[in-house]
Amino acid sequence: MKPGARNSITDVAGLLVGNAGDTALKSGVTVIVAEEPATAAVQVMGGAPGTRETDLLEPHNTVAAVDAVALSGGSAFGLDAASGVQAALREAGRGFAVGPVRVPIVPAAILFDLINGGDKAWGRYPPYRDLGHAATRAAARDFATGSAGAGLGALTATFKGGLGTASAVLECGFTVGALVAVNALGSATVGRTRHFWAAPFEENREFGGLGLPHPFPSEARNPLTKMSQQPTSVENTTIAVIATDAPLTKAEAKRLAIAAHDGFSRALWPSHTPLDGDLVFALATGRQPHPPEAADFIALCAAAAATMARAIARGVHDAVPQQGDLLPAWSQAPALR
Image (cartoon, rainbow, N blue to C red; front, side, top):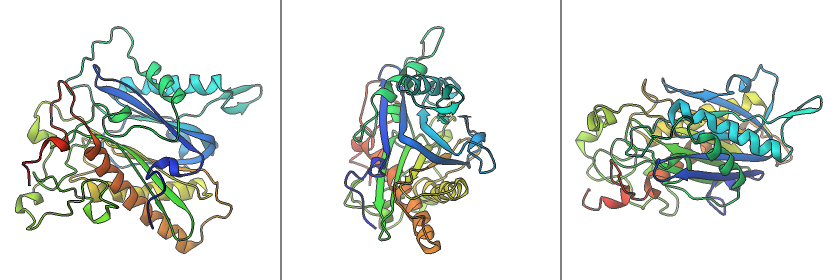
């Protein structure tokens, strides 16, 4: 297993990603566009999710594929982003056919970044619908990570959060890609060090190459959270997409989403708390001709967890300093162990 050419979710054939954001707002939107409708599922494991169009992704429900997935800041206001994505896709003639009408299917999830130092005085209507439209129009193979899109205003317990991505190509030929906006209650780093919890899965020094700390700090067993750092701001959420070019059923896609949550547990301490809305969408583009055998599907699920852990660390690693930040970027903390 090795990273794909871009080390990005767009190494999965059939996917594009677009970002749009406002640095004064300190918030934004990321859209994953499927060039052709992709089989989709979702697994929510946080206690405080904010979502749109997730019920239809359950295996027993009718619609099997989606046109795009929207990840947005803005808490519940950010759910408007999916309307902008729908508008852009409708303009392109995309959508689920119902007689003469086409309805773009765009599940969405949001994270809370309303108290992050940005100017949220947007007037009557929030800007997320327009940001969703702009992000869809910008969708491409290459896109910015770190302080971009849905990760623009993200925070963790110790450093700024951000938008991260990673990919892996399996020996059986399938590709797995992850995309995540990291805004966790907990920390992606070990205690107060710069070492990432995801270090055992790192490829090619993609998030600094520091490995795990030695000796391991005893205080790392005590979870650092935003509640201890910023007592008045405890709203969080890490939202993600795991994708593959394997042809999967909706039930198999849901199992892949479940497996990808193991990457949250590997990369964030703590994760899946009552104050996080931790969620993973799964997309299967089906660009490979044959479905996975049982052993290959196990490998696919393991790769989903490892790739997600790497993407989380990269999101924090890639964040950059901006005016009005409440927390430092990872790159600003050389004095930490």
